[in-house]
Image (cartoon, one colour):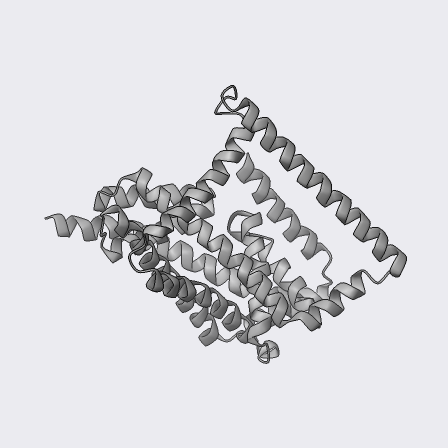
Length: 328
């Protein structure tokens, strides 16, 4: 039901955006797509593969403290299968890649799943860092944009700040009440209770962070993590430069597009429908026509999705072939 809901949300946003485009704007988008530079698009796919290589190398480092040293090609191909599976059912791939690793490397699923939690914690922290960094780099343009949206006079701003403060106070009070209630009734609550599930999620994040203390090579882990996110950054940059009209787009705009686009991927399965719209709106902040931004978003999303499908199918075929030969 959740999959259908969020998939439907993506399709609805896509339809809504298309509905507001004129015939001329649709023609501009089509002409831009036909004139896109294939060399730059190939680079988008290349850096997409690089990101998966860095993710596999990083995962191997997380698995080492468990006393396991899986072969790189098995972790790499398992990750490709995971992304492919996530297109169908979100988070299915995280379990599936651990299952493949158990099948071909005898790494217990429950242990490898713990490392996946650690990965997610680190990626969330990196996303927050990139989000803040991108706003610092492009502060002037974003400040002007926000000011134009909320330029309603001093009284309105003060009124808005009061409401924001009240909402924050209510949220803090609600969290404190829930913490008190949980501690008081911890032994009486069913494991299926929604509050227990929320606490379990936060505990998982905490355990994931604590497990990072046992890393054998933390410097190399940071290097692979940086390589992963720089690859994502370069994917956005190359997607923009595939269009001649966006050849002057700098790394700062690509960074904020990465931050905003990541939110789109979180909202719907694979970012379908939402990703190109978010990229269009983000580039619009910098005075770039929405048709160009929409085209760049489609190039980036389309290339990534095509890569995930092709690489995922190949990985599914190669895993049993490679490991079958090795066993024989």
